Length: 229
Image (cartoon, rainbow, N blue to C red; front, side):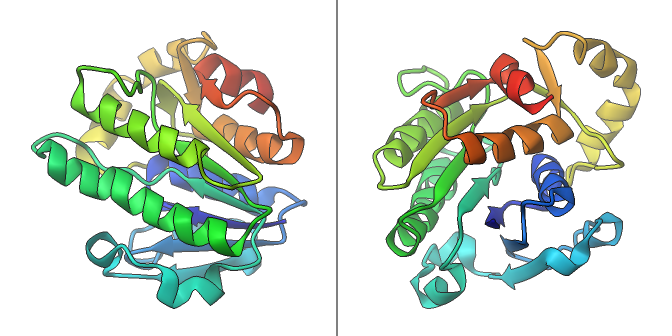
């Protein structure tokens, strides 16, 4: 299986990337990002790096046009999309441009050139098109649009609290501090499958969903843990 990942340098993305690299059924992983993984401090800790290929697009947030590299995005079985930014300090228009517009631009190109692809989008617990909360509303609209696209299967992952494993760190320094301070709390939460999961489980769940093609389209924390552990 050939997999493409957007957002592999983030905490969830690192977990998904690692599970793809150690999974014997995955033969190639293409990571698409604005900067090389090595520059983000990711690549040095990865196993099975011979499977890994990178496509660096520094202007992807601004141009949001992937047709020029469509040939490099062709022939894949799955796309895992944990790419996301915080809504803090952003207007709804700016957040929508980065979150929904970028995601749908990527998805449109992939769907056109990979008709048998499975697309898995990571939104988050609380995502709802009708929510009064801006980020939840924008991501809910993104989910709806993805589900309407002609993929072989499209799945929405909505995890709650996520515990990093295997030395994975967030790109946000403040989050790493919080994880260190509250690690015992997060560890306790991980015992409750309806509340928390971890980066390893999320990655394994994505691979399992890709293989099994279940009818369930929305995956909350409990569902992710059920299939990924």
